Image (cartoon, rainbow, N blue to C red; front, top):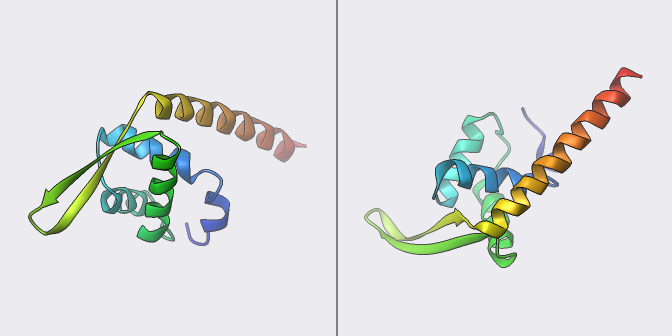
Amino acid sequence: MEKMTELLKGVLEGVVLQVIKNKGETYGYIITSDLIELGFEDIVEGTIYAVLLRLEKKGLVETEKRKSDLGPARKFYSINAEGEKYLADFWHKLNFLESQLAKIREN
């Protein structure tokens, strides 16, 4: 869906963490590609790399740089225990918000 960037800003950290958790370990380009494939066409790599930097600074992911046969070294990300806690809280809050929005819509 187009023009969702503003709406997604509040949830991108949780969404990116979930993609990392689902993959087990991944890097920015793959995360961006996965989100685009899921229908988030407005997502750009620069946005994802900014989110990854925030996740790293918050201590929610582990990183490892690895050589690449196709160019410069890539930074791989994996979720850690703090990231797992953050992600559980994220989904709890998002589920609450979803149920409240559904109530408002029904009124």
